[in-house]
Amino acid sequence: MAVALIILGAGKGTRMQSELPKVMHEIAGAPMLVHAMKAGESLEPSRIVVVAGHGADVVEAGALDWNPLAQIALQNEQLGTAHAVAQARDILEGFEGDAIVLYGDTPFISEQTLQGMIQARATNDVVVLGFEADDPAKYGRLVTDGDSLERIVEFKDATPQERRIALCNSGVVAAKASVLFDLIDAVGNDNASGEYYLTDIVGIARGRGLSAGVVICDEAETLGVNSREELARAETIFQRFKRLEAFENGVTMQAPETVIFAHDTFVGRDAVIEPNVVFANGVSVESGARIRAFSHLEGCHVSRGAVVGPYARLRPGTELAEDTKIGNFVETKNAVIAEGAKVNHLSYIGDAEVGKAANIGAGTITCNYDGVFKHQTVIGADAFIGSNTMLVAPVTVGDHAMTASGSVITSDVPSGDLAIARAKQDNKTGFGKRLMDKLRAKKASKNKG
Image (cartoon, rainbow, N blue to C red; front, side, top):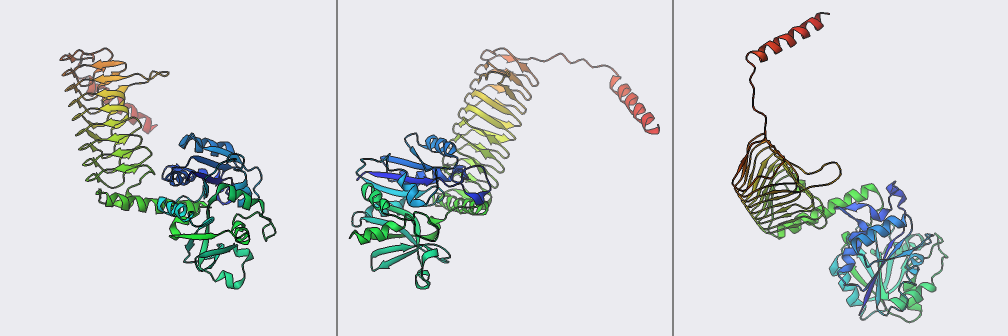
């Protein structure tokens, strides 16, 4: 059966105190909306509809950036969840499969839970995701009769007896798309908030003789984010999960609470992550690599046996081959570092190719930007770049070639050659002491005055 996702993301999120739409606030480097889309994509949906309202252009851009096949429905007035889902009707006109309603501010629904809902749809016309709340607070309650869901009642409208029910509503609903929209047509707004509640479709379905069931998940999956405090709490939950996942995959972390993962970080078995490492988006680290303390990685690939850091920064486009070494206070960007090459200290390697077993001396800089364009530096296999070399791109240093320390290299260096590009040293006899004595006398005179 084909599946369509309807993801609600129209709310402003007043408690966020932000101009940014609520669903675009990030957890682990990705908007909450993307987390919801990722979870739903485990169902291999044939259609994805994101309902946007406040900041619709920003929400649309974020959705399409993650999945260009997503479609946007606009909810110009926020009149409740049923009204929001109804905005997807035109886009899904004629769709014969199941629709599942997700929320852009509820980022932790698991793939297993969503699979369970689709399976439950085989025996129920409507399926609702529920959870047993430790503190039911003001959640809507699921009123059941055995295995059958009879209705959902919002806390504001619940009787004292109904408020004692611990089984709560997550808001996630699955039904055949045509059935879902037919039920929504019958939803009214005669309630304490004057809104069109999606939850009302259960009672309407039961009144029409349709069946309704419940799938129960862990309460943590249903966490909604409505404030900065809750956003920080969600980040903490995500990081805890990713660290546990890393341990289960055979990764060593001496101080896991100091390691920050992105939503898409991959770290292979027997890799070692030292304290205070930050992974931004798009990082993969292969088995047996070591990321040393206080390093920051983004948009890069680290191969088996490579060592990075401490205090290294790998920027997007960095590709480290096996057994490479990126040392302390080294920054790389759009750089391909071949097997066994070393960039050990205080260097910047950008828009560059570094050959196998090359050695880059301390303080080396690839001068890649002329103020308008970026240019490439190519360093050959077994080349030796002396400390404090400036490589003014575009420039090539051949295999087995060398540059003298302190050189400014502006022309290609043929394979096997030694390039020396610095002025001849001229020592002025006694001039250093005389100059220093003069300066000190001038300072003393100024202090007396």
